Amino acid sequence: MVDGDANPDFLKGHCFHGVDGPAGPNWAYVDLAGEYYVDIVNVFSRNIENERLHYFLIGLTDASPGSSVVRGSYHLCGQYKDDITDAGRNSVKCSANLLSYRYVIIQQPVDGVGFLTVCELEVYGAKNLNSKIWKRYRDYKLTGYTSRLITAVSCVMKCFFMCLPGLCHSINFQPESSTYELNHHLFGYNLINLNVSQSWSFYEVSYA
Image (tube, rainbow, N blue to C red; front, side, top):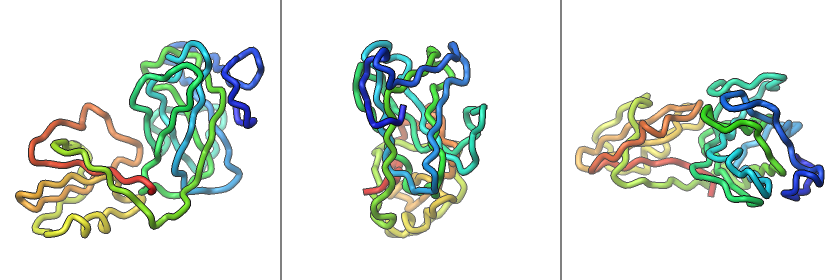
C-alpha cells in the first residue's frame, strides 16, 4: 500500500485489501517514523469497486493504533466528501490547526460497504507552518461545537489569530452583530451540523 506503486490492478500485488465486512472497522494505518504536521493525504483507488473508498476518513494520532482502530477515537484530518472514481487519486487537505502526528489512519465511514481497498497512500507535510488559508462558506454555520463566543470585534483577522492550533478548528462569523464563534472539533464534526444560515459565514483553515 505504501511501496510507491499506485497500480490499480489488485492482482499486481500493490493494493491493500481489508477483510472486514459492512459496518466493520475497515481501517489501515501508516507509521511516518516521526512526527509531522500533515498537510495533504492522497489515496489511490483500485480500478474496480471504487465504492469501498467512498467518503473515507483520514485520522491522525501520536499513539500506535495497534490491532484496533475505533472511529471517533483519533484526531480527524478530514473526510473525503464525495464518491470515488476508479483508478484515481483522491486528496484530503488536513486542518492547519492540528498538531504534529506520527500515525496516519484511513478508515471507511460507519456506513461503508466493507472490504477497504487502498492501492497507494501518500502523505505530505506542511511546507510552511505560518502560511495558512481560511476557506469561507457563505451563509453556513456549524452548530454544536462552539467553545468560545466573541462579540464587538471589528476585524475578522483578529479572530483568526485567536483560533489557536489544538484549541480551535473553525470559526462562525456574523458581520452584522460582529459575533464570532470559535469551534472545537478535534475528532471531526457531523456534516448534518453544518447548516444553511443566512448572514453567517463558516471558516475552515488549511495550509497554503
